[in-house]
Image 1 (spheres, rainbow, N blue to C red):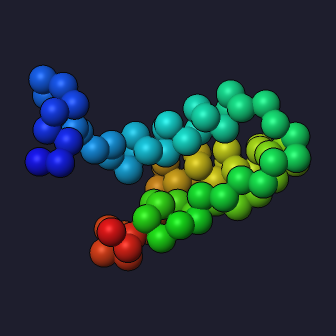
Image 2: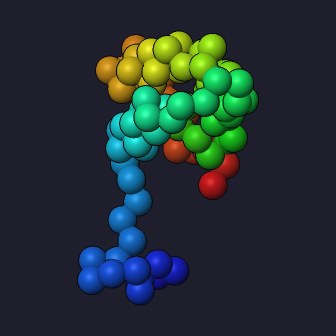
Length: 81
């Protein structure tokens, strides 16, 4: 209801897989060397912490592992929403 006016189909929340795909694309494309990256809020499906540049490959590996089910995602009840 809150986002009903955003377009003809309204607001559609991303699925957990779509969120991971979006995060992966973002990290692949961003070109930063010493920027602290945090995605560890309770609402995130996958908690990530690192320094872009140094930890970028590891962060992308963790996302890929979560996308294949090798790393468990935070369950909906635990996401603090």
